[in-house]
Length: 357
Image 1 (cartoon, rainbow, N blue to C red):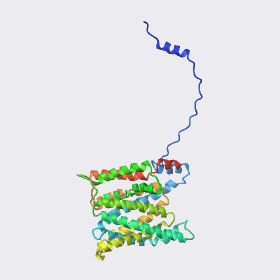
Image 2 (tube, helix red, strand yellow; image 1 turned 180 degrees about the horizontal axis):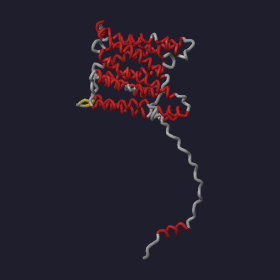
Image 3 (cartoon, rainbow, N blue to C red; image 1 turned 90 degrees about the vertical axis):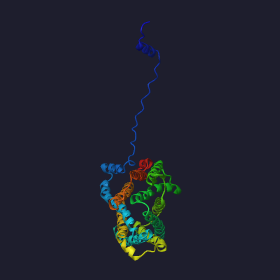
Image 4 (tube, rainbow, N blue to C red; image 1 turned 120 degrees about the horizontal axis):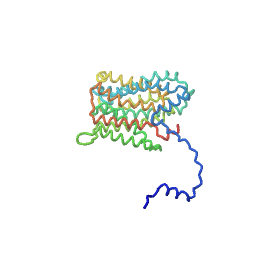
């Protein structure tokens, strides 16, 4: 048998087959580019600034970002001040004096910021006053209990561990939104899983994972801070932020003063011995840092601001290492890295929100 020609077979089969009518080629529709705001909050700002729509907004953001970094630094070092203060006075005594001092620092700033504010209301209604005092009281009660538990936990845990576990409120807040009919996305649940993995590494000892008294206090503290943020989120659009903060500091001082007088028996010599940490925590952490946050967040995109302020937990680890010679093991550092990734992931806007912007 001769060798078959494959090309002849191909042409013979094509000769007698009717060809289908040629359809017009559909017009190519360009694919919409994937929004990148959820990847990098600076993307939308840079794009608007390049096209001229932003009117130099990116430059203004970069101008005020150092204020937020300074705020995070002050808050991170404040954990060291709180730890040192525990050596002289009880945790609730420290927070009572610190909170009252922070409220006193904000008092003279209220008329000053009112003069600088361009959108000052002409008249304050009785409803506004009611919302201000009600919001300040609720925020003060939550802040007083949460800060007292945090100060108490510093007797059992290191500064870095306290800073990172406390920062879990950023992950807990979206989860608590379920009770307010705000469904968290898949991104939030992934952040929760990562945070639990980081918490496991932080609390794991040789025999297995175990929550000690310090970790239990910090988890309760983080949950209360989450409720505190939700209450602030409800009242802040209705009232002046600085006045609300001033009231909450005084209320928090009264809340901490009750267990201080009942269980700790504070003395004037102890308070004077802790004057340095109390001044730092009251004046810088409460007064100066909060004012910097209020001024900077008026000019910085919210997602970028929250991401910048989350560096507070990193500063707490560095401050504990440099100032108190506290070190973390490799396992605890890995847990801190996981928790920081969860904190950042929980704050990034979802794809749906990014597509709308």
